[in-house]
Length: 251
Image (cartoon, rainbow, N blue to C red; front, side, top):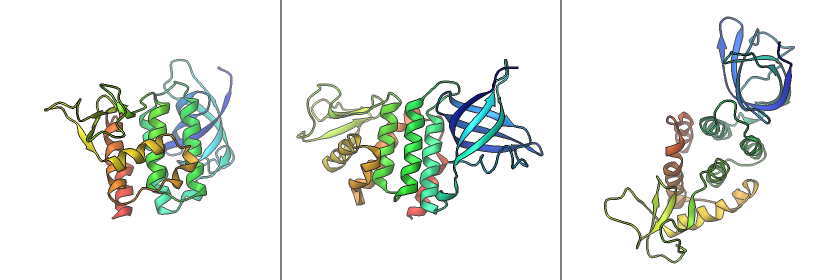
């Protein structure tokens, strides 16, 4: 039998399996995304005491098994409960954070930067308000740490600063902006207003914990959400269910 391993982890999702087991997917600090089966986890309060709900941070003890697609979950020690995200808006935003990180990670690849971003994002939600600027800031930091950092300050074609350009467009497929002079007819470009571009550039350079100090409101907030949606879409496997939850709360 392989030796027991331990790592700090955040629960991304879990589901019952059979009458008493659970299959749980974690983002771990040391081993990346990991899915395992907890035998008797639906009933065990000793080995899994309120530890397997999404958002929960735990110290996970597990074993890998040669040739098996699932790890064997031995027990979890509770480090941070999910109960403090019961506010509907914080729950919706937290659901979005774990769902989008889940989609941008694959099993078995260590991603400590993304683990730390998700941990800090959930802690920031616990400590403060769920705002549009926080969500857009998280998305920009996620793209950066995933290697998809969008080029927003200068034209992706001519490399000139777009801060004074008469017209600026987003090229979703290349993950950057182009000035009006470099845009060509027939290309699938999305126009970006100066106010929204300035807001996104500011959020891109702001630590996640400080993004609420750069509020997004009205048309700028709406457009910023659309722009980030275009930037994220090429990297997502399927539509995010939590988007509908956030939209329902905003209506």
